[in-house]
Amino acid sequence: GQQLNQSPQSMFIQEGEDVSMNCTSSSIFNTWLWYKQEPGEGPVLLIALYKAGELTSNGRLTAQFGITRKDSFLNISASIPSDVGIYFCAGQRQGNQGGKLIFGQGTELSVKP
Amino acid sequence: EPEVTQTPSHQVTQMGQEVILRCVPISNHLYFYWYRQILGQKVEFLVSFYNNEISEKSEIFDDQFSVERPDGSNFTLKIRSTKLEDSAMYFCASSEYAGTNYGYTFGSGTRLTVV
Image (cartoon, rainbow over all chains, first blue to last red; front, side, top):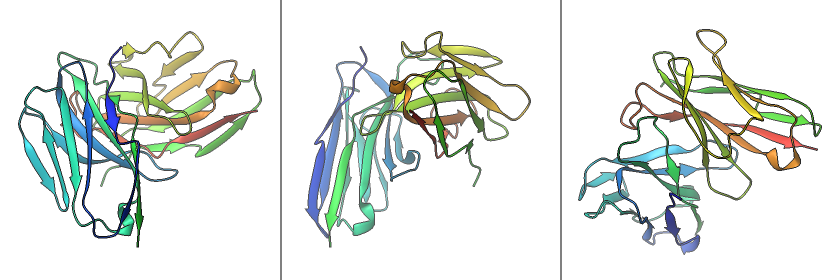
């Protein structure tokens, strides 16, 4: 099936450290998205990527759309306690007309003050 | 900022009962979606809906499920004869068009607990 493999599954870091997580797929995606989810809430969009090779920043967050269109990474620099949450990658397949998103399994981030 | 609103926030139901989860999408959006997230797992696509019909559905979205836009503002997910394994967070989303660069927004979800 259409799978996004996201790693790592969880991270425990010290405040101020940088974080990196990534998603890979055996299929080509024409859009990559990174979401953050906090307990009891829906996913909130952090960064959207639409072109292969695109590198986009949103404050301390940087994400890239892989050249092969089969992967993406998200970096968080100088982490702070409010970065805690679950980060999901999501993709939209090439040719998909119905707007369906496929999600990765999530990376749970814990930040120690 | 425009929001997708879901009600109720939490629903508890007896196994075998029918439930209706409600969503109010963003007003100028034309595409509507339901996703499901079982506790501790990833978000899974259930169905997309456009122009009063289903555009795409996943294997999860079997005959037990149905969607409807009963009026100009609401979008509902009905689950008939609920099972224990239907317990999950259900998220509604909407977008202006099918692409993710058209304001694709998720609601805060309804936690469904089947007992």
